Length: 343
Image 1 (cartoon, rainbow, N blue to C red):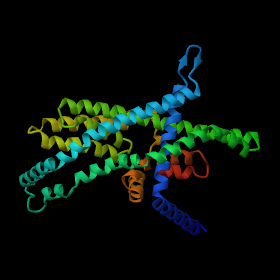
Image 2 (cartoon, helix red, strand yellow):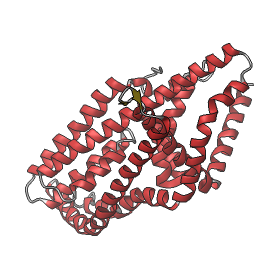
Image 3 (cartoon, helix red, strand yellow):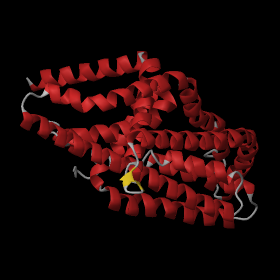
Image 4 (cartoon, rainbow, N blue to C red):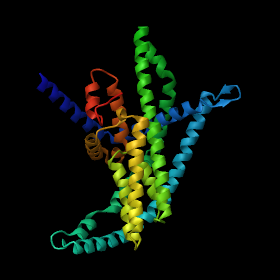
């Protein structure tokens, strides 16, 4: 019986990912719209707390302020990306050639020139392709702008009626209250994740920018933006975020001092915020296992490319929060978590 159930689960998972793969043009804008919708209502709930005279900000005013804030943030972010990415892609081949020379010199000094071709290894890494992949996320998002806006508008309209519909589903008042309490707990945990992850990523990016600007690293603004975006992908994103500026310092400067300064400070910032401050405020219950992260990135990356890799971690975290709230699925949440602790 257990083998039969396991087979059903595998078949179901295969069908789900097959549907996600063939339905990419439908599901990707829908998921982005859901993320956008959630950010809007989360920001709006924050704006509602502001006092104006004796009263508070109205729902309509809070929604307008929330949408306006997100439009400004996204416009500034895209402007910074567009103004820097062209320069980065242009400079990458030049930096890569310098890196090949450094790698060959290094392998010659340690006596591994004949046995292992470090220069060839560096040459085989298409860094331009990696950077194009990262910017492709924003291009895909821009290409779906129209349908994303439509989905988001309908989600916002439906949101006001959601609680009333749930009330009609549950005829028993106690069942309704119990469901709403559980939903509220899930909502609070998701809000905690979004707020703390966004804040910690922003602080990490700002501190990293200060360090990179201090050593006068090329395109420090772009690398700081990359740090902010990639920090939403735990472990793997943090490694990639510091790898690019640290490796760039080797080819930009003749001295090794900037390399050591960037290595020490950028890695220390990631450890301090990602491993000490963030878990303290967020709690380990909202963290995923590194193995789960790697598998999720591989599966979602294969399904939806770079867009899937950016979307998969928030999806997995939210899914794990929901699984942890129900007795029957709590065991799955424990297995997906970093240390077996779920809220």
